[in-house]
Length: 301
Image 1 (tube, rainbow, N blue to C red):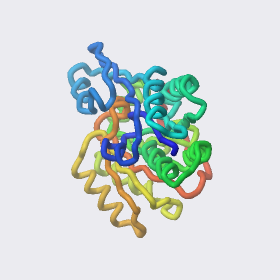
Image 2: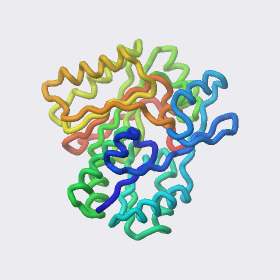
Image 3: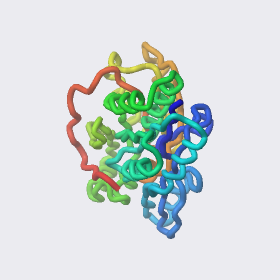
Image 4: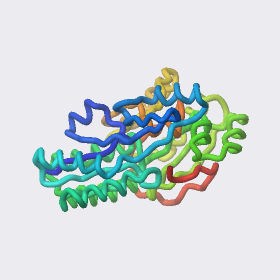
């Protein structure tokens, strides 16, 4: 039996992790006060937002060291399995992938580390699909290769409530953020199959109106949507927006077989801020063209 592991960026609830027998390693959130807390274990997005309100500074995110991965991999192997497929947060955003590889080399030749080239519940959907393959009897390399291919069909589009957090965290120039906020521009971010982030669309107006336009853009090409599963993810719960999303999904001519909802991890909250919203699903076909680059959004942190 192959076991699947991941990190806290996958945003699967404790119940889903238990259901699929998935072990995760938490990323670290380094606060301005000097505290270094484990994502989802010792801090939540609310802690991020509270800290920002007080200090106007965003925490820094940090990858788990190789020793954290070694500890998890050893425990999983000792519990009994034929191998591990580890699905890591996008290597463009974190050194977690590289650290997991270093740890895997120290623990066993039967560990494969896959760069999800995405994050949050899109990464979680990959974890679920890998678990389903493992449960059906798929082998180590079969699962790892399938996940490497599957990431090319990720629909990793999400909308930011604003650019304050991205600017404070150094991922978006402050002047760009200031101009966007003054003009009430809500950027839609896209993570492509190579893990690169861009802004293919920018919406003007109040957040609820921007959310409507974001949903419109998601379902423009409905015939290319894999309706097996969808994940609604958010950094802070907004009842009006969630009602809008649920109603929009219910109005589609074809319904998703499974609909999940989840609050994002602290890593996403640190860079996205409150009111970041994502609807993640798989596409049927490979992307035909690359998105045009819009507002600058600066790489790894």
